Image (cartoon, rainbow, N blue to C red; front, side, top):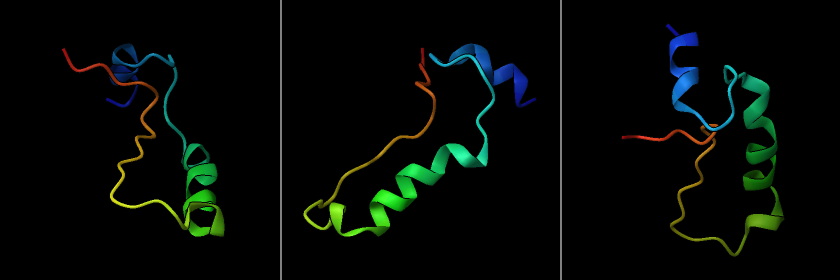
Length: 49
């Protein structure tokens, strides 16, 4: 089932837990202190048609 969704993404591979690490570290760090009300999509470029 996970593999079937790969075709809907710009990045043609299955998402792994390590794909979220950089975003989570950024959001937990002082570098993101000035961000408010944003949506950060870590989805491999999913295209909903």
